[in-house]
Image (cartoon, rainbow, N blue to C red; front, side):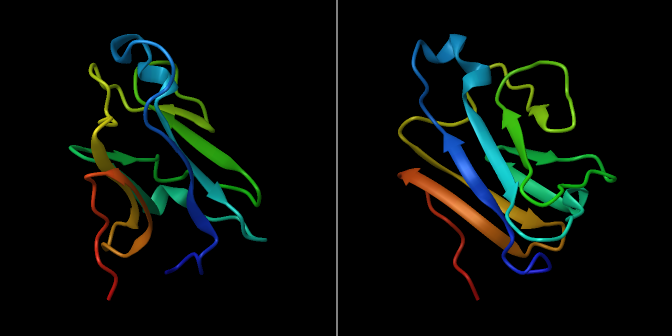
Length: 121
């Protein structure tokens, strides 16, 4: 883990209040830097099957910062990003979100229902 365990999934909101088709931006995945140093988060990938979300290459998370990736559409900002899905990306019955490096090193995973996280070495 090149981040030494400091970058992790801090929130995965799967089934927010309201009809699924009207709550796309309320479904979200949050990635937090809990460490004492900045982390180049542009080197990380968030997998929300079947989507793969990449932050801009120069994206940095300062200590204590969280970037939130919303399911629907909107204006991307440094700490508020949008997946662009037209249907709810986080399946209510089960799924997983994986935070990994481009090299495939899994940093964190959150699963619910029938979802499965990758096995670790």
